[in-house]
Length: 186
Ligand SMILES: CC(C)(COP(=O)(O)OP(=O)(O)OC[C@H]1O[C@@H](n2cnc3c(N)ncnc32)[C@H](O)[C@@H]1OP(=O)(O)O)[C@@H](O)C(=O)NCCC(=O)NCCS
Image (cartoon, rainbow, N blue to C red; front, side):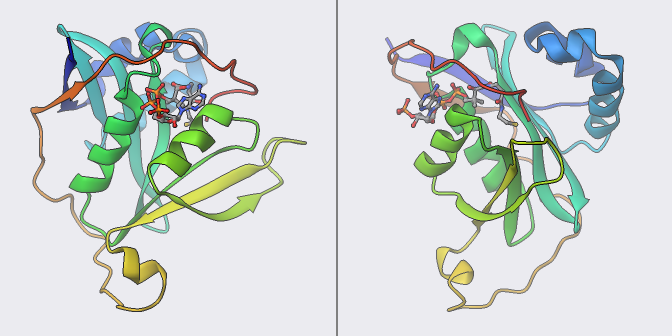
């Protein structure tokens, strides 16, 4: 039986829901305050199954005014069922710029695997954030040819395009085995 979940826009009142599935947000007041601020932007998305949040993507425009997925997180028990991929696909579809960025630690195997699977392109690294574990940056262009420099598209980093909320996704159950995460999420 395929699994069903909805993707809905998040706001500041959803912060407790994020903390319920992200232990770091639950115990780190600074992270909680930071995510609370980002949620006020109204650019973030949550995946819900049976009314419960199963994952979220916190999005900002603080990276050269481009959409940037600051944090993607799926509840541990719900991983490897397509939730993370669906959230990233959704973020890609609803923003109004010509590209979207994200980043993760080099040690984060699951996120790097997701990036490869979803067709995001590596676009740089920063060594000065976590010593010994560089931050890798990824980009997804709205047109595949733009990134290759073939068809230049204008960039309009302005307001968010009208939302595609209430989207339903169905995912077939897949294996639940988790690759252990190394390093901190982000
Ligand atoms: C990274 C994360 C969001 C992935 O979410 P998810 O819902 O489990 O990912 P999906 O089921 O959508 O996986 C999509 C693809 O990514 C790859 N992938 C995801 N997790 C993987 C893992 N543990 N090992 C290997 N490949 C993995 C696979 O190619 C997968 O496709 P497949 O299952 O058809 O093979 C999740 O592991 C997580 O919440 N981690 C903690 C927070 C974090 O590190 N966030 C990223 C940095 S902000």
